[in-house]
Image (cartoon, helix red, strand yellow):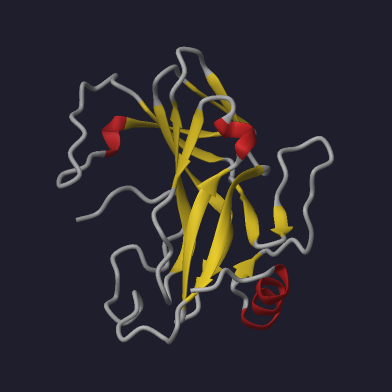
Length: 184
């Protein structure tokens, strides 16, 4: 399963709309870098955040999730409280080819500040805005900067197209737009 290069990512983005909007090269002037890199794509976080709150004393239950667990914030700089969590989404919309699996890693700039970015794999033929999970593991408030780099996506090509793709089974997160909460 080879990792795919900047040449392949650029070609797919231009010809199939795999990443929209697509930034051809790393942007880093005064910001956390984003755009095409050697073997990946650094995606940006949008300005829509859902920050965990205990105001309503809700219980976090993945089988019966309630939006009462979050406060919605639209901002250029999101402050995540100490030892807390926020959801966001990528600026970019992704369309994954049938023979590709995409994994995501957090940016080192955030990791070095105790901010963990988690994203589950993007499966073959999945498409949508990627929901990003930010964990502030520090005892201090932490800032996340909208419209700047948040994570890097790595594209892995399978030895052959899969038998059943995410699209074939009409996955529950197919075509998501905006920050998407857990579904059962």
